[in-house]
Length: 487
Image (cartoon, rainbow, N blue to C red; front, top):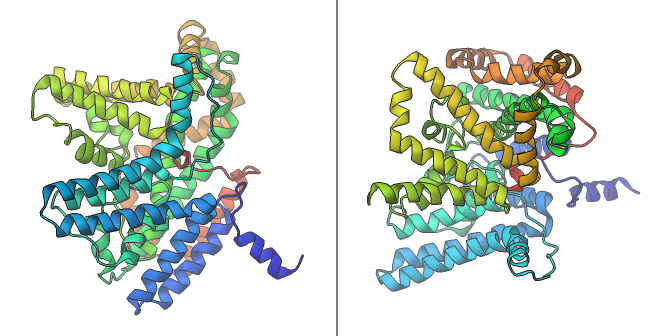
């Protein structure tokens, strides 16, 4: 096979090797984008077209031919947005909003929930409809929500439509956050397309810090504890003691945080290198002293999306206390279903909806905040509500979740503690590192950023090289996708 044929095959979509931030191909891809982005600095239109093509290609390398879904969703919402803005006829505006919602929710519903619907019909009515062979495009929940919010904002007269389709497609498809967020609002992103952003030395240092932190979180902590401990226990909970099940549950809480916040850190860092600022997606969620506060710290872009486009649309807390509790529950149930087509996710959402309602009813967030002792109680309470809900979020089935609960309460065996530390010493160490890094004071983080920013280019390159070397040492044979790619 010739050199050109090899290059051609590498550039093609390979379902066994989707394009990921933590893959070798992405390093070359991003360097290519970064170089030509710099070349087009003074040519705004050429720069946007170039970045749009690269973004669509990125999605092609992630999901193959299904990159057309991003284009279809963008085209529908682009046209709908213009029509909604240009007419004062209420009926016409509603019709085009509904067209936008049907198009986006239709894409999401078909690819994500068709088999869920069929399996539940079969279970309820004892039918035998065959499940469909449907490929789930990476990140379909993210770009449909992002595009859909654009038309809703225009319908509410909170946003004017984008005139240029390429600019709008660029907003929807921008590759750093395309497949796992943050879910960016058009009002935050579109103005950046028309404004030249000059990166300061501090911006470059911050971007480098975020990329390094994200790589270490994902490729070292999250992947290692997943492969070497967490996955084993969640796959066969009855083979392990209750103590090991509990450690796997704690481990998964830090795995998903390091995995998802690691992706968000890298997405924000890569975007910043290209001259675009994305919103923060995490704010030390395990520091929360109530579940209410937790959802102001975890997956901020989804939390605010659910609040602004679902909870408030249902009436929020404006109608009555009972209706407020119902709205909280519906929002979290649908938020759970957004994560996946399984009753496990509905249970997960139901747990959070119930606790949010109870906290509001008993005014627990205020009680937890009264003194340091109560804050500590709130911290422990919140983390364990989250951990309990993650039993069902991660478990292969509801029965697996129940099996883990059974082992924890009926077969705990605390005497295996020392055996666990010896047998899983690296896993235990990484969980502790993940725990401590989460509670690192902000001033320490700012100190590291400052040192990285003021370092010479050679020193920055050496640090990045060292981090890549560390990642390679922990790397398994396969590159593991980010957890939230499946959503």
